[in-house]
Image (cartoon, rainbow, N blue to C red; front, side, top):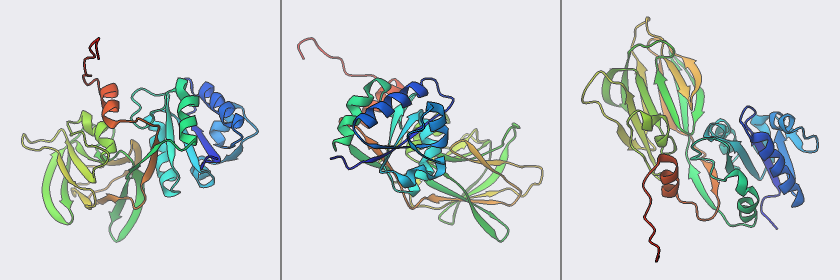
Amino acid sequence: MTQFSKIGIVGRPDHEGVVDTVRRLLKFLREKKLQVIMDDVTAKLAGDSAAEVYPRSELSGHCDLVIVIGGDGSMLGMAKFIASDQVPVIGVNRGRLGFLTDVLPDEIEEQLSLVLDGSFSVEKRFLLEAQLRRGDELEVVGFALNDVVLHPGQAAQMIEFELFVDDRFVYSQESDGLIVATPTGSTAYALSAGGPIMHPGLNAVVLVPMYPHSLSSRPIVVDGDSEIRLVVDAKDSLQPHLSCDGDLRHTLQAGDEILVRKKSVPLQLIHPPNYSYYQACRSKLGWGSRLVREDD
């Protein structure tokens, strides 16, 4: 008997090939006599009326396991809900890179059979929680598996802000903004901005300046339990934006403070047997592989 009897399925509606993969997965799970639960968008996409259906934000609360079909963006969109419900998740890659979705569509039956039989590993990936302090009010404005980003929005303009780590002043900066990234997000936007690749097992956060007006400003890696505080410069002419995993969360005002800290509950990401983070880097980032001799 598998420990996963209630399987949730989430598919990206506008992603090429997702419909075929969802239907293939439905057939596989029902042949194994497992209960299938889908969000309303995916159920409509697949044209399936037999599955139990919930809104996407409530899906994981009714499952033992969630299968996300799409790219890394699909996983990012679901991470905050799944993590809060402490339900494990596995991804089927219909995207380009697929750092978070490592089951190939043609290997669904083989890989998921192993997982359902108990042959898998669980990796805990922490999320970031972003809060906004405006005057005397403090509110949670978003969660991010990859990154929280302070940026100028649509207009190309320099932002002025101050950075504090655990209430200790680090620097004031004039730049296009700052990326606050988890180890998971270190291979995403932060990487393209010149940040380091961090192993996902690290308890660390990287702070990556975006086009700083300084030759000496470099990424900084800090403890994952640190509190990051950004204070927006008090100029009414600037209205920078705050995004969580690419999703615009707030337009900021002069004097606003952004507080970023680790979310208390991590995402439980399931990998099939023989998963290797370094192999994923070789595949996704084009790293060199070992030469195989004919007599090996």
